[in-house]
Length: 506
Image (cartoon, rainbow, N blue to C red; front, side, top):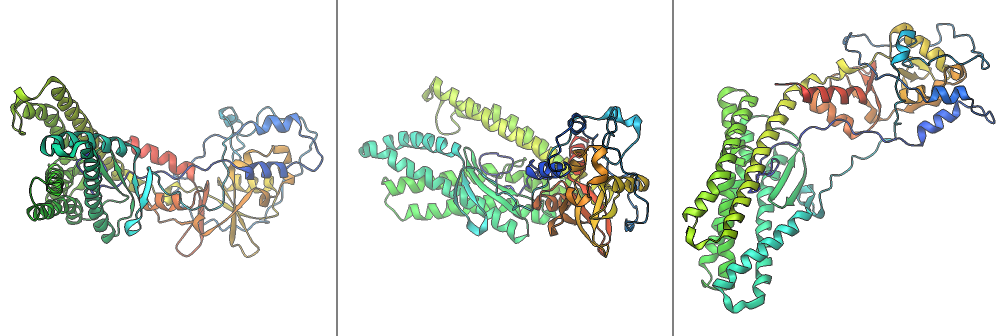
């Protein structure tokens, strides 16, 4: 973290894991539904009534996490007798396409929407004006930066008016240059974190310059306390180096000149950035260093996080109370008699903002650590639904009958050799009225499998979430290491498990 106290700012702290990306509805589901309607046949009231009723939330197959591979061959059982299209509509559709128990029919709700789009490139994060991609990491300038740049220009311009009154209005141009140079130093601070993170194979999502400094969004945690310490320490270290460089350059120019004043300002500002970030409380860099030390001593990263977060909260209270007192006492270079009421109000406001940022960042660090502690519970093997293989020409009613008999909740379309090539979408099944299902082949409701939609049964935690985010879909084929079908993983099941993990206490 930087001088801002932002929870993700230059600390090497990973961004919170995100659930699989939501899948937007598109025309695919509409096409699949229309395929069930014969050409020229008007939609009946029964169609409209059943189509408006959906399924209860799907259940993960956690009751039998080690169920065997479902390589059951299709075509070995007789199909259901054709339904009579003229038969009167049933009182209520099944509660779930794979569940015909009448006692569950009353639990139905609105139809689940959302169809799988084809594999898409993971959307790039945004965060303002894109300035470049050093080391392949996008750097953004947030709109709030322009506000702080104007504030720095105004404040530093007032200082220049006392030191170099001969500049006149040109002092604001010099002040603007100082604001840009200062944030260039902040960017270098963040790039130091980024380079070390990339060296440790930790992906960096983006760097953002904003109102109170910079944010390096690192997407994974360090694997060892030593790496955690180095990742946090390198930012303040580089700020100290920059301060020394500006000091050496200041000694080489004549004092009392524009270059001399600019170099002195940059030296002091980088020294303040380094000192502030070394304070031992999350979310500051010093807090990450304290976390690494406690982690090393106890062997428990969560213990280190708790200790550093509570020190960070104590630090926030100290800033809220202590900063205005230091200003009023003259310890920061000006006595109480020289500061007016407006200055006192500004000092109190600045202290309140900094304290709120530090307190919030410490709390966010605790919540994220708690979430990461429970992430290993998200396992593809335990969240996978039991599935049965069917051939493309199999009628939907027959496929659902086989699934019900096997206690399965998913369908995998296989070729003549038994190799899977598509998944039957649950949302599309719900849209087909029951009296039409004997004439609808499962191939018309299936989504072709891509490489990204085949996931290993051994995936768990962040690795599972990252894999699903790379290829947004509603269902994924889960396979064993030898390629055997294990089942189907629903993104909805993973999202529910993710939310439950966030709500669980440590």
